[in-house]
Amino acid sequence: MLPMRNFLLLLLVLALLFAACDTTQTRDCAAFYYNHNQWQNIGVQDSIQFSSEEELYTFVLTSQEFSVPHEEESTGGSLTGASDPDLVLCNMYADFLYTCSDLGVDMRIHFDQLEEYEQPIEQQSIFVEYSFKATGEEQYPVKHNLLIEPVADLQYDYIETLVREGRTYTNVFESVVPVPDTGEPSYRKIGVSRGAGLLYFFDRDGKEYFLVQ
Image 1 (cartoon, rainbow, N blue to C red):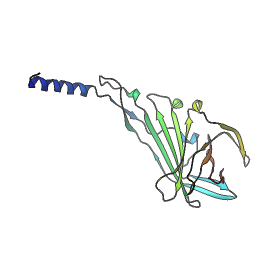
Image 2: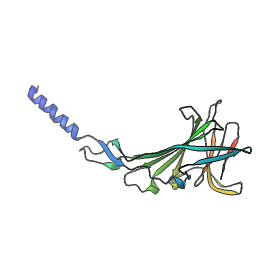
Image 3: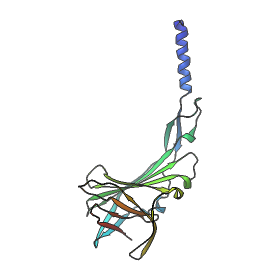
Image 4: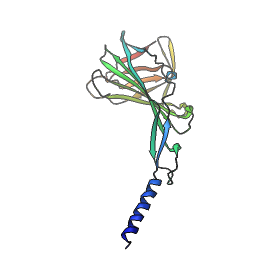
């Protein structure tokens, strides 16, 4: 059996070794910098209008938020404790909140930008999520999450050409999600296109709302 003094010395050495082998990696991340306007143009005082059965419905931008420079961390890497920032993924975001008083519906457009270490933006994964909830509620029960970049990775079934109201939209792809049997909003299907963003959405009864430009 080790003498108490030697035992305590061994514990100290082991503690120092574990401290040196801390595998938590950190990395400084930039603010959100993906140009979301190339997907959907969103102005400072923005509104988006849709038509349905000859009625117009306007979603008005109420707030927006962008992630700021911050630090991300990840576990794993060198057992010597050396810095290894290429193991840390930076997650930046932008949030745009809208409300439509005529429908009693709030909409959130949320962008996620995932950046690996020193990864050029054309190779980064960019997601956009369109979420809907009843005005006054806290949670968004209807969410459509779509990968929009990089273009080469997209596996959606496209509508190659869609012509509406004299306008032509290309490479339109759709998202369909389950919705509850009751309650609103129930926008189970949406259609999106690069440059126009959200083109249309359908509720559970098949009623269509189409973008007015």
